[in-house]
Picture 1: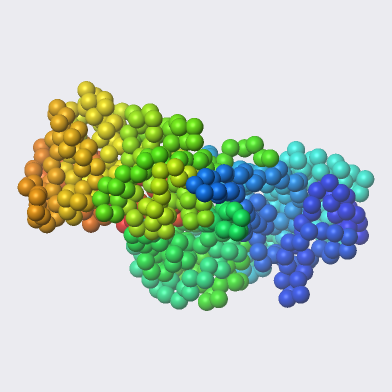
Picture 2: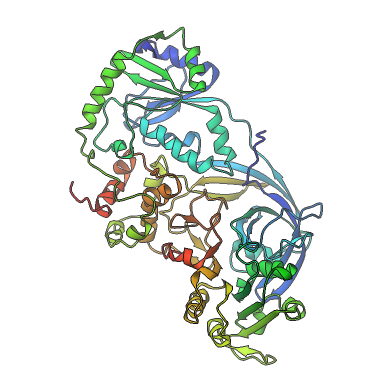
Length: 342
Length: 277
């Protein structure tokens, strides 16, 4: 483990940015935080987390897949993929780091999605332990420890210092480049902080939230639960939950006519939208009840069924904070899971 | 340039022939620009066809894998991409990628068995692939019965091939029906599910169903009522798709993706899935 004084953090950022684009959470005018590219003078945010998850770095909201040249009856397909540049994402919380494992299970399963795969190869994650998890946090429900974030390098921040531990070869390589700015240290300060975080976790309001009622094989038991109708009644179908979610990965593929060619691009889509499954001959999810149910059944039943029991939620709490009608996965889990106690 | 292969990036296909099958179904013959088959497939598998600037959609490959020269797609005019394709002329290039999905178990489950194919309307398109595959390897299968119905005589797909080739094969019985009486039609009149019950097949065979959801439902009920077991009945599903490889997240029924776990399902497997298809 290595450490450096927080006074020197901008030197660390400058060193990293010499070789790769560096992104980190930065305060916005509206009081929220967002990932921005670091440049001299950029101030790292103290916020617990960003409004949008860092999934954008690997699975951007929109990206070009290919281009077509159309001339008369003839078409030419142009591979517009370029080699990704190396980049570093700094300050990723344990929940969001875990979301990359979940996205990997989708995009890196054969046939590998080369757009995502290339970015994963070129990206380095420096995670950051949480010092003050909030009342919307429930990562522990999904087995995530906010004091032990994964990633290529794990980091812990105290009042005065920041500690780094490399977990992968890529992380080791990067940490070596920072050797002039950091010094070798033991893990006593980090261990003390882990204890503090654990103590906070034990006081969080959602600490009792359990996944016992969910998991693979529960489809028939839960699909026709009468609670879906009530839970989905006020859902506006706005899709905000899917857009802020670090694990939602449904996408659409569309063509755009540029005037002298066609760009085929991919963009995020949402199972909450009425046209998501609409076909020329009908729609198999006709009302918001079916669409709402799909989102939660996917995260809590279908995904674990196909992925060794892994749930497709990391308890980051973004949907709790952002849903305009205050509906969220926690309410669904309590109601459908039969655990109605607050 | 990123040299990883990418399933979403298609090949070019050339439409070399357009056959008008019914008032709203055309069959398109597709090869690569150098005149070859775009890729090999198994009976029941699908391909993503696209018209750049219009869109991409999933279609069943209606030609048999035993056809080594080209692929065919029978396409009903019913949406943006299909409307555009219906205006296309030979020589038109499109894009093609695949094959996608799980095929019919023609080489294990079907081997040595009597086969009963039941189709309604454009539902014959995915079955034509497996029917012609089984006809090609005729000695590997027992008796073949084909029940096919449509709204009218004019709506029967592949009529020429059915009359001239399928009906004349030894050990192949074709039973055609149309919904309402029509001048010039002396065959059976009535809906497919009822006709299947009237024909009263012995149940020692594998049945394959494809057609509109309502036809599948009643035919399935009918087959079960005459003693068929759902483990011997196969069908295909169709839902909206974008990627074809289980990643874009829209064609799932419960934990199964129609694009990669289907489109072919055994009817007892379907019973395990939520009724959302």
